[in-house]
Image (cartoon, rainbow, N blue to C red; front, top):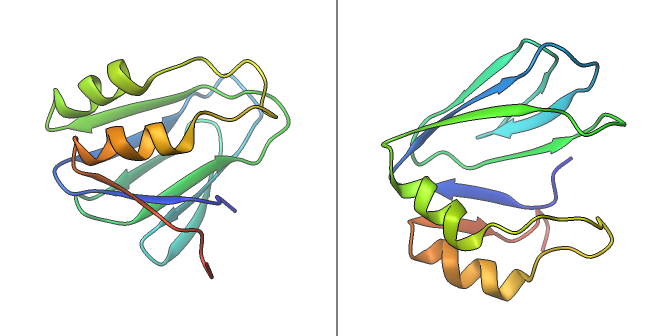
Length: 112
């Protein structure tokens, strides 16, 4: 299950797992847990706590559509960095400082 949950106060998200693969994503949307298989779609309403993780073996392709436009695009431009080594995660404090500018809240891990 995902380690971190987020909430975006100003946007809704639509997640589509591209069908030309075998992997699965596990989603937590509010209190509901579900698995997305290739070709599946999930909707996260504005202001809903959510998290997701790739529970498959290979890097899948996930198409994410966000409305209202512009907000998340600017977040990804500012925060984006390619992760080449999963053992070397992004700089957490840097990301937390950036997300606050875009109305995104990163919640502590469950039970923390």
